[in-house]
Amino acid sequence: MLIMAAFEVSILLYIFLNPWDDFRYFFGGVSGGAFLIGIVINAVFHKKCYPWIKYVNNFIMIFSVYTLCVFSDYMALFFIVLPLINSFYYRPYFTVLTGVAHLFMTYVCIMSVVITIFDAEGEVNINYWMSLFSVFEFSDDITLSVFLSKSFMLIVAVAMLIVSVYFSYSNRKFTLRQGDLIHKNMSTAAELQVAHDMQEGILSKDFPDNPSYAVYADMTPAAEVGGDFYDYFLIDETHLAIVVGDVSGHGMAAAMFMTLSKTLIKVYAQSHGATDKVLEQTNRYLLQSNPQRFFVTCWLGILDLTDGRLTYSNAGHNYPVLIRAGAEPCFLQAKPNFVLGRKKLIRYRENRIKLHPGDKLLLYTDGVTEAQSPDERFFGDDRLLRVVSEAKNKNQREMVEVLREKVNTFENGSDHYDDATLLALHYKDYRQVEPPESKTFFLSKETFDGVTDYIAERCKAAGCDEKTVGQIVIATSEILANIDLYAYESGGEIEVQTKCRDRRMTIAFKDSGKPFNPLLVQEPDVTLPLNRRNPGGLGIFIVKKLMSETSYAYKNGQNILTVEMDF
Image 1 (spheres, rainbow, N blue to C red):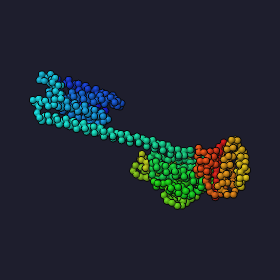
Image 2 (image 1 turned 180 degrees about the vertical axis):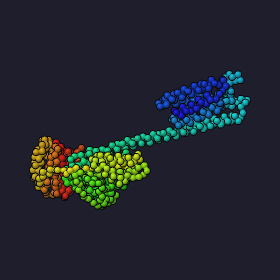
Image 3 (image 1 turned 120 degrees about the vertical axis):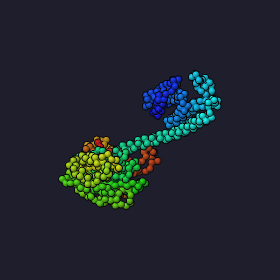
Image 4 (image 1 turned 90 degrees about the vertical axis):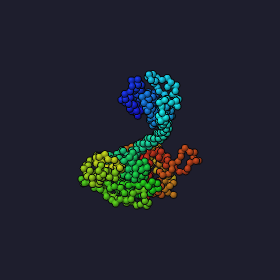
């Protein structure tokens, strides 16, 4: 529409800048007035794009150009231009419709010039209208060369109409393809936003801060979704796991691989408790599920909250920064092992260090140290230590925020080429934990009732209501049947530990039988009739439905199944 308005302005200027005979000013005024109307309409409605405006534009063009042909036969050339303009903005059928109209007017203005519109006295020649289609009725002053030049102009007009129609169809196809691409891009953007929100939900935001320890973390992805991850979770009441990892690559695929890696590490950490075994198991599984050959660098540590002992393993990741109370920060260096997801049968080493109350540990990914300034300098390890030294007396949250601000200032608006993750741990004090009450039974079908009675008494003593006690007793019966079936062939000892804290009853069942994780058994389809269900899995399914939380670990040659119930 703006193009049409500009075209109208140019012709309007032509009208008023060229003097003509007196009897032609009328036609110039009419043409100019029509163009002014078109300009006003386009100016008022240029943001609305009403369908009727295109018809008004073309009518004004046809009418105005036709009146201009009174002054010059060659003004009919504007009729040739109009379909070409339409072809870029309107559908093909409209281009064909207006093109035929413009072609007809070109014919009128070019071919009928052999008949003079005005006679010698300046009066309108009525015979002009009667002879409109009499192309070969030459006046005495019309030569063959003039006729041929006019015919050539008409041929050009026809050719331009064909070109306009072709452009219109081509532009229509291009517009449709462009619309499809825009729709796909919008869908992709929406999916990326959903993935971003999901990733934000996967990464823990409920940062703990209690008398024993505090954790704070932050992850800034280079794209909508990233490949970095962090996690922290209690394996049990006295052991805290912290992990930071970096998946090679970016985007959706890397984010999915990140989710898988994070989940595997958490599951295996809760089962094994040894950092080297956790990474070995994770590496073994990632090798089976890695068609795109991603790899993961990862640092995993498990802190014993009762005495500050930290065991950790490093799978090709950056060295953490250790901030001892009253000392300068330094890197916690230990020879790193190979990355996860690339090589089979990798053995990972477990390292040990003791943290004292007041010590801090900063984990990060290479997106921090490899952040670039506008002059392509890296943030680097030395600058990282200087910034941490300046913030060493701040709490874990302030330390991460200061470091993030320093990195952003250093980048000074430069693009992020990699995800950047920070996690700070503050070990405040030794955790004082009351040991759970423990009792050992020789498990057999005859002693089931004795075990369930003992657990019921412990639950009542802790203040559990009758409904909660009933649910725990049912779950206990299923667990005992499961141990009797899978752990021992003819009975064996089990240890039952019970503890209540903050209105949560925790019961751990320990046996020395064959290693078996019942949580990995496929859940039965309870919607099917009994004769169509696969055997097994129903007992542990009932336990998981009744209890608030269920977990399994294999430690020190023992199966440990722990159930927790809020009341």
